[in-house]
Length: 172
Image 1 (cartoon, rainbow, N blue to C red):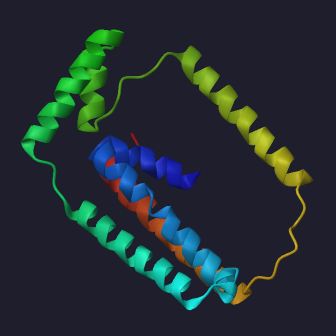
Image 2: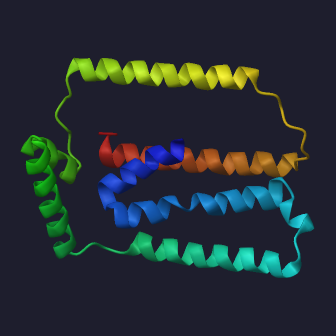
């Protein structure tokens, strides 16, 4: 869920063509967790492990290429044209569209909508908590030191990214 939130910011600030491929890096985390924390490679043959490692390296190279790419003026112009079409099609306030495109503070929504958003978030939270309370710990073997190491790395990345995003956007 945290990754989905960051994905929304990525799409907002760098566009769908860059944000979505970067968000798919979660596959690398899944492979890392599966390989070292859950020991999934134990039953794999050498060629399968090599394929997974090769694919991961290729994906990481692609992510680096996407991360360092820069959108040209023509791409921004196409974004503006698409936004103008959607704005006229759905009758959206031009100031709202401009603020969203520039990453500035978006106009406030009505209190009715905020109330509905709060209700939906509350219901989803209750559902998650209720499901968590009724869940049972699965019987599986874990390499706990590696699990703690990966959790620590995830938390460091989360905090670092959240602080950088806060400084850049103020979470607007």
